[in-house]
Image (tube, rainbow over all chains, first blue to last red; front, side, top):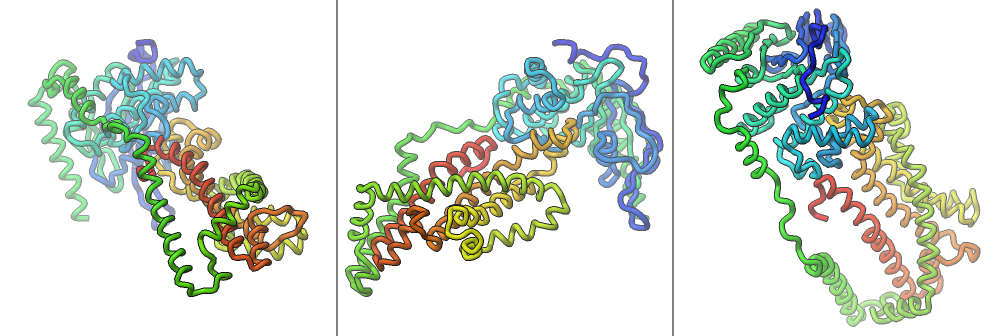
Length: 264
Length: 296
């Protein structure tokens, strides 16, 4: 492996991204809907943070804001990273490009030279264990394999331009929720392995408590309408029993948050 | 998250992953069907239709419902067609018409493509001329012939104007439809990869719109051909040479039904031939690359 896949060396910056008092409203006047209200959140370099919440809590809105697909209505987002890469629930691969050309695409758009592009693409495909199917097109791959190609593409985009004080940041919007249980399980393990190899910071959105606890170092629970940070849990290096206990605890809190909406 | 060396991953995750990949990879097209069988499968059904049509025609002729000058025998028409083909005249007619149609079609593509892009991407332009484009598509191009003749006389310009007015709307509309049908996730994916307007159009928008654009081109060709025939039938002059349309109109003028039917057969033959030889293979390549078009 070459430099681009090595863990980030010690850096002086203490966070990869910091949201302070972020507010997002859609529409104007009396009919406006407040999706996020006063969200404070920081992700350290190389940290794996899971954002958890029921539907309508503005998880996706938050990712869109960090990704720069949408503008905040208030507050501030401070990015110490290169352009954050995004992985969606669908693989969103270009159907006319082969797997390796798909991974190459962000590098092509960034104007990286061909030989360099090819080399990095091959490395990334190997990293997600798809070195052999680089010539296949998306429709020839299974859902899980497509999502791994999407992961490699996101890494190509995240790691390019990282370094020199710039961190890599990967934003993931329920990337495994459309997959079957076994594939999801395998891909979660795969993601952890890739994350440890690359040392990218990850902001992972999910509505699955078990997934959040298994993957994340920290789990952040958002309330719904408007989304606010309700509580945080440190879930790094838990024992199996500790993990089960935390899952129960978070589930209970999540239920509380959801049932509070029935009264309103 | 569990510590790296313990926790849930006790079942050899690598082996499970490898097994899943092996199971999940779709079968890359099992043994290919032999060429002769594929040809038989595509060529036999239309041949059966042709034989049936000629059979019914022959029967109707034998029953003598209509006088000979209204419904000639298939053999008579075949004789006329054969005579024209062997004398090389038919080739001349076809060449005159086809080179006009191809030239006009290419000019049409060059004009319609930027129009389609602008209509698809600029809201004001779409509101302003979108309905007009759709309306023009349903206007029979014969309707333009009188106007064109008054503007430009019976000249090649008239023929090209009619042809362009027929083909441009359908090519432009095809491109607009192609762009409208792009799944919105693809441009979004492009945007988060840092693609600006230009890079987005080049790397995502245009390739993603290609199947719709190709359908538009195919339809545009059909419209070009139809418009050209309309123009050639109405605007006839010795200066313009004899294309298939003029050949057909000659038949009408001489009340010679075998000529009329031969001309219709040739017009059909060219239209279908170009579709099969040019557009079908192109479409097959484009769709197969995207995992679409199982029926082709």
